[in-house]
Image (cartoon, rainbow, N blue to C red; front, side, top):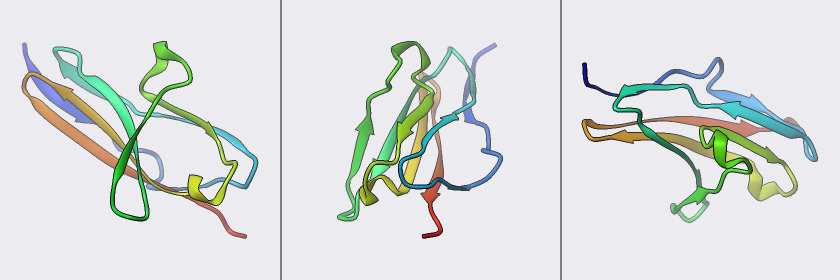
Length: 96
């Protein structure tokens, strides 16, 4: 059976991460054929930058360290297969 991609909701739509912390967020996706999954970061000027995974085998995991103020903001997990695409946003913030 063929099924379009479905990005499953995150436990929280906003995640608090402190400066200097590492974090990992898996993007759980279903679909058949198996969807291609990637992450993008939204910039302040409205652009979206594709984020390269640290581990090529875990492309669905956002794995990074907050090393500058620009690391905070909106990230999107995207999934695509022959039947369509789906996406879900996640906000990375902090309480200074």
